[in-house]
Length: 334
Image (cartoon, rainbow, N blue to C red; front, side, top):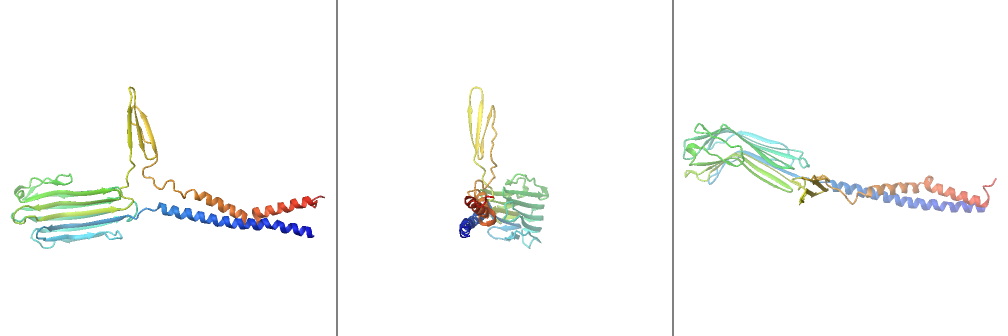
C-alpha cells in the first residue's frame, strides 16, 4: 500500500506541469491572435477622404460689384444634397433670368466617393454698359464631377444670340468666342472655362459656362459669370500613382526584344512589344509582417488546449507512467 501510494503521487506531477505549460500557451495563442487581428484591421484602413463642392447661378463683379454669387450653395460635411432656385435679384446688367445652384455627393468619405455640382442660368438677358444691344441665352449650364480618378466638367450653352444674331459656341474647353457683332469692341467672352488640378492625393475643378469681361470705358473690368460649378476631393484614395515602368529595347540583326519592367514582374517578346506580367498596380497591403502570426497563433492555442485539460495529453501521459511502473513490479502479471 505504501509503495503504491508513492507511485501515484509521483504520477500526478506531470499533470500539474502540463496544465501550467498549457495555460501559458493558451495565453500566448490569444495574444498572438489579437495582435494579428488588430494589426490587419489597422493596415487595411484608408481614408477617410474629403469632398468639396459648391456652385452658383450668376455673379457680377469688378470695380463695382453688382451681384455676389447668387444663389450660392456649398456641400455640407455630411454630403447631403443642397439645391436652390431663385429669380435673379434686381440689378442693371442681368435683367431677367432664373438661377439654380446644386451640389451633392455619394459614398462620402469612402474610396468610391463622388461629388457633383451644377450652376445653371435660364432665360438670361444681359445688358452691356455703353450699348443698347442685348446678349440673350436660353440655357447656360455648368456641371462638374470629382472622384478618385480625377475631375471632369461639362457645359451646355443653348440659344446664345447678340442683337438677334446667333453666336456659334465651340465645344472645346476655354474657348474665346467670335462673331460678337456690335459688342465686339466692348466685351470679351470665354465659354466652357475649366481649370482642373490633379495630383496624387487631390483633384479639383472650377467650371464656368460663360464669362463676359467688359472692355468698354463705361464699365471697364466688369466681369459677368454665368453658371459656375466647383468640385474637389482629397485623401489617400484620390489619384493613386501608377507604378513606374521602364522599357529597354535591344536590337540585333534578326530580332528585336523588348523587356518591360514594372511592379509585379517582367515580360519579354520577340519581334515586337512584350507584355507585362505581374501583380495588379492597384494592389495594396501585400506582405504584412503580421500575416504569419495567424497560423502560429492557431497552433499555439491548440497545443495549449491539449496540455491544459487533464483528460487530454496530460492524463494519457500519467496513465502510461503508472502502467509501466506496475509492469516493473510485476503487478500486471497474471
